[in-house]
Length: 632
Figure 1 (cartoon, rainbow, N blue to C red):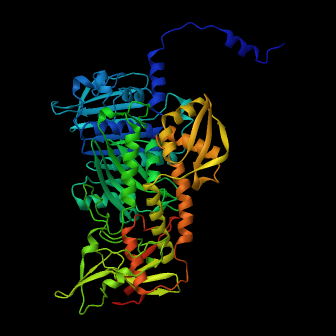
Figure 2: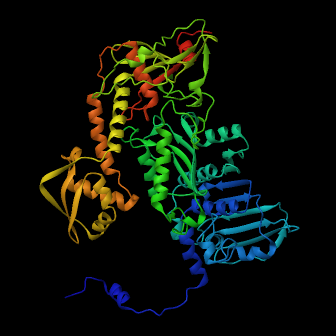
Figure 3: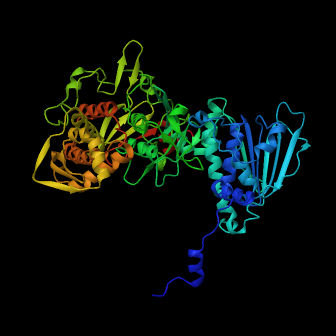
């Protein structure tokens, strides 16, 4: 039978070539392929070195998308004259001295490949001055290690690296570059992330002689607000919560967007581990699950988060570009991140700061406004402080009769919706001596509109509440709490189902069999690749058993715990809550309306209904005045 390969191809396939050492310039260009994918890769490596040098100001100059010129200048510690030649050689670094250092990397760049690799595919120049040097020293090359002699030049403390004509000596790789604007957009997004990761450092990015981004170091609250607004946008600043959590050796800080501030893409999600830009599926999944019960279908949250963890508990030496990390205890990190973000975005309206957890302030002195001029839910500066603020009235206008607290409203089972509590159901408490009124967050009800909306007065102005959506969330959260406090009731299958799985899936089930027991499953192993399901949660009796178990095992393999059953159960509880909540066109008394407002203030995630839509909006006095052109 004739070979389908061409004669030339056949000879190449059968030819045995002698093993030999690669020429140094070829080895350099292969190494450069791991480090220098595109101009943005060069910028990343040079920025990491600048940040590791202790710089407080970094300037980046780009021409023609980085193909013509990339220049990074910092005011860091600089490189001594005697070490400059070594700095641009392969496998040379000041950041790793032993294997122990590699297991607890504290710097951003550490591989000792960047400068040598970049210089092998460009016209390269480095000028640096250290504190002990009387002058700056310059070293340059034009690809393939053709280095000039060290020469003294004028310069200030720090380092400047110029990379010109990238890939001039590797035309095959140059053909893979996109347009100058596309390449610069990659650089711009990278620099933006670096600016977000290091607020204490000033940066300036210039492209084709035009300043594109410039931020000052953060020294106080005002500069922090300005810088965050420049990089994340004022809408995010006005509609985000400052968060700060700490547990044992791990700490989380930053900002999380309100569920009502969501995106169609994941383009406003920034998470840094020990100041390092990472793209970690486990961490992204943890934040996604934290928002799972409050976001509208298909929408994505926005956040800027900083995770700090002991360096010896995270491995950053996983990927050549160092975008990926590995944790010594991924489950611990996943749980901490998911719980922290969930607690922040789901905090009840009347929750106060404390308990060792600071949620911080809204990142703006002015409330955020959305479509039609309405404020987004709870978009004022501090969700906790506003509840205790006082407002003066000439005469009391609030009914504080305790009988109103016992109004039996919208019962679910035998439970009264308007539970007794120390909070006035009327929306405010009155001090007869001072004439002051202490407002609750949602104020006090004034009337019902078309059997759909509740109109209430609070300190800021007018509150509009979708009564069905609000009560649906209240009932839903109550059902979830009841489920969490009791084991799910199992329902035996009339015919047990045998599942054919991979051995790795069976191993995951073996490791987490107690989870399945707790969730109401009864499963036993039939063989190395078979599981038999004899019972499952009664709430999921109509579910696709095989698909559900497969999805659960996949979740457990990735995240160490499952959300699939939670999501299925929550979806069913949401349906039950919808049928159990007050319907449109039902007429409520003032006492009943106030009872609903108070329950909303005590309920987690009450800003959104079960489908992610807002349950209430705020219209300020300023906005009301503007509608009638008052003061103009």
